[in-house]
Image (cartoon, rainbow over all chains, first blue to last red; front, side, top):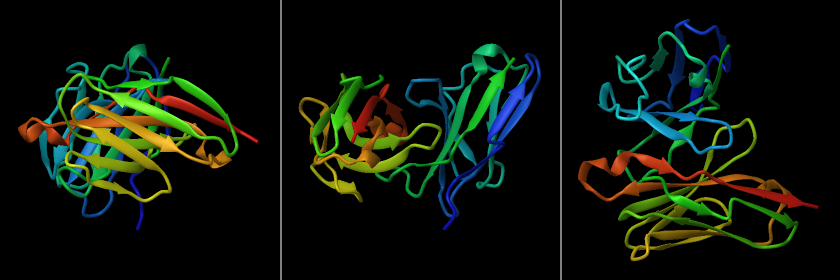
Length: 114
Length: 113
């Protein structure tokens, strides 16, 4: 079946603008994760959903970051009043089981804040 | 706690072998390995579970030393397609927080003809 789909693939925002990044996980995957990946670094955890419940948002860097998954499927990561340090690739991943199963990543959204 | 990977980078000729290591200062429930090519998504390679079970689908092997909280990924007879950045991801074994993968900084593997 289809993999994890993210849009847009690239986003350029002026400092201070709001952005919304979309993730469409694999059908039937209950767990959904958002990660932030800076250039040359490993993915850093942002937040986790099990179905529509956001169980962990400890990785969100500030209150400008907000994520939702209202119907337990598509998720949106919103960044308000973007700053240059928000520039990174934002990866979404889903998995079938709560644990002991592989993460399936999307291709990410590369956000550049100018 | 971010796991530590070594080496940071390795260059091979096609057909040579490589070992990539991953270690953590905290007790681990499982270790995952992923490979990421430039501009692409990380792709799952293998899970190693506490107790010795392995789950994977590629022709690679790995080990998980629970006592030392270390894992090693073994790439034998490397092919050009093995090039990429390898990440280990660790799940802590503390109750309900098993779900969260914490990734290392990665090991850049380059295989030359």
